[in-house]
Length: 402
Image 1: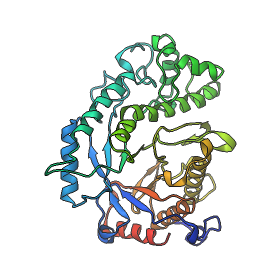
Image 2: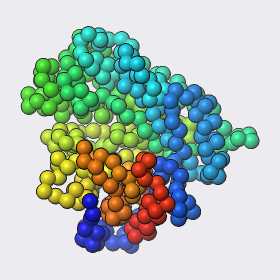
Image 3: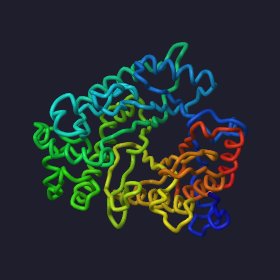
Image 4: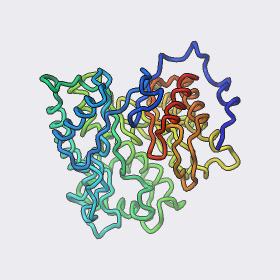
């Protein structure tokens, strides 16, 4: 889908070039090619696939990666892809294949497996936090600060940990799980990360929004509960990573900033500042991240929410709404602490069931719009559908036009 570049790139809503922040940095998912290889604004992520790696194995992989591509600089950004990530179901044949010990270990005790088809999907993380924090402590201790293999301390940790408890994970099971949770001893005792209060108290403070376990989460009778519970789940998810990793990283390397894909977002719900679940515009929930940086995903908008509107235009508008809402939430957040995920030109993938290709025009317009809002750093993601020299050259051209 082509973009009306003239109208978007010259939008009067963008600030004047003289008012824009300093030269931006682009952290890229993989090694740049073409003219991007020598561009000083581009820093490839040191991305490690966890897949049950031990801390020492992960460090060895990072060291080899940095030395092989001659990136021994103070700007090392580590991405532990899949840290603590797993579906959490101990009965699934591949429940732990997506990463190391899962943060979501509610199945260790409490909710019974016969009470709900999604019985392990809860925001109780005590077991998972402890196991993942132990892994992270060993990882930090193994980082070579001296000797022949010494590395400078990392400056960023961009985590990619997904598959969190959310009302959208199961149409029916999450409601049943919430009802089953009320019979669990942790209901009144275990503090929810990010809140410091047990679920019983949080539910009381919310006015006990009702949930019908025999209806889906998007049934009208359950929507008030779903809006509240989604905010609980997403806030607690980022706080769980904070307990398991962020605060350990900050303590070891002061000044090193952390965030996670998907969970590091903050919306206070005031004056329209809220997060919306894709494809369900009624699901307007509030969320507060525990990360140092906020990490919105500025990809395609859901066509379901862009009826009668050019999808590229809708995607730009959505990204602007999200970043603006974040920057104004919770007393104001400096835009330079917002690091959006954008797509490399050439990415071709299904967008909510509709095949879309990221055009150079859309990437250019997205960068210009976000720069106009005060954003200084970007994470550039792509998959196997993109990454040619032409795609990278398009990114460099987009960067030069901001």
